[in-house]
Length: 154
Figure 1 (tube, rainbow, N blue to C red):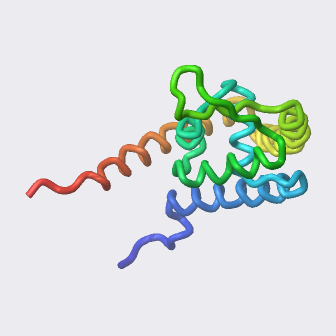
Figure 2: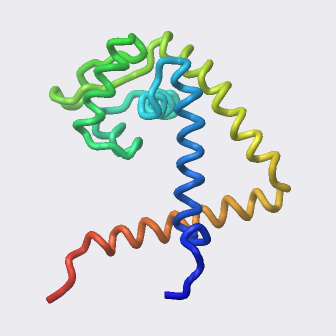
Figure 3: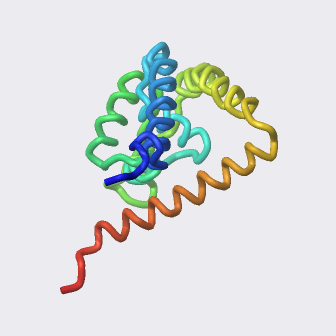
C-alpha cells in the first residue's frame, strides 16, 4: 500500500487538533475544579437559561446517565440549582447559581485567551476560510456517522 503516511490524513490532523484543544482546556479548567463537561454545562446554562438533564446531555454530547452524574457533582458544588419543571413533574430544570456564574466567568476569561491566540494566528480571510472548512468537515463527519450506523440493506 503506497499511500501517504497516516499523519498526512485529514482525520488524523483533526483528531490531533481536538486532542490539543481538549488538553489545554482540561489543564485550565482543572485549576477551577471543573471538568470539560462541567464547564460545558455551565456555559450552556449561561447561554440558554434553565435546561433539563436530557437537553444538557444532547448539548454536551454525553449520555443522559453521564449527565445525571455531572449535574449531581455541580449541584453539590452549589454551581447549579435544580427544581421541578412547571410543565412536567418528573423533569428537573437546572439553572446557574450566582456562585456558578462567577466561577464560569473566571474560567471563561482564561479559556477565551486560547480563542484569541488562535484567531490572531490567522489573517481575517484565513480565519473565515478555516471556520468554513471546519464546518464543512463537521457536516461530512456527521453524515458519515449516520451512514455508518444504518444497517446495510440485504
